[in-house]
Length: 414
Image 1: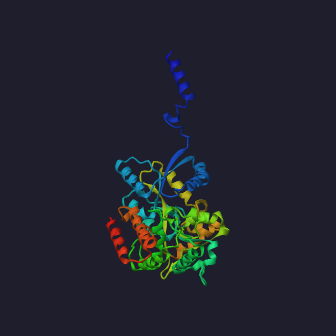
Image 2 (image 1 turned 30 degrees about the horizontal axis):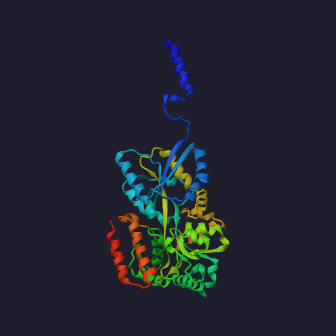
């Protein structure tokens, strides 16, 4: 009787899938492995959808895996790494962090060095080596680099000052152009992100670099020269500029005609109707083309539950052909891999990327030192307040305003 009962129990277990090879319990050994990827990049729904539709399936099929892609800002990503390190409970397989935060990941021992010497078909851009590497080892494989570009609606061309080369424009010419557009159209047609704590700091931080300033110093000699020029633009911004949290929409709709902004945002507008726009490097100053430049990077967290699969994922995502596909599909981020840049063609989105490459290779660049401040959002707010007070408000240059703003920035330093 006992043998009959045992036999029936075994049959029941096998039929319900609870008896697994090797006596294991849980998921079938042939079921896909879940790979948890936590990222501060590709946060827009269109970008994430592209990855899920066009990129991830290929890796998942090759490796019997399911990618779980989650978006988190840099600060919570780092805090979670600290918590996982303290508790020894690791749940993240791959982290994509921003360059400004990479030193903390490396210094705290939260990430492993990557075997980049085994990936001999790709050369990562030297522009970000100071943050992606340490002690001769590479801890982050850079991806999704960006600089700032200029985008103009072709309707604005009739106001372009005589003798101005759009592809080699100076800041003074750009501002004169914006002023001429506003006078001719009866309202301002220039866009920046007026909503607080967005990207205005980067738009004008790059300008100040082109005048010899430092980022994010707001009262340097170079920054003062830039602010003084900007006061001429009091009436040149769109009447609804303070509602813009992203300049893509007003540039696509034709509400605005001129902007300097993040290359991926410019790429989204440009490729929607390339015949309607002119895309160019950001304007230049006496020191050259200034731009805030950033990148993110793939890293392998110490204690990653699926370490080997995570390394395969990082290798896959940084293959030159994959990197180009990702750059094209996510609006025009720059693939910081030399071999990827070499295969760019002449499509509208490739044109955006090429402009970005030119700025990256020849510009006066600065990264984002967010981790040096107690709140980067508060740093952004300082720039927003000066813009609102001195440019949109009085339209009068006031060095005392800049000095007071710098005191606020200094108080935010860690």
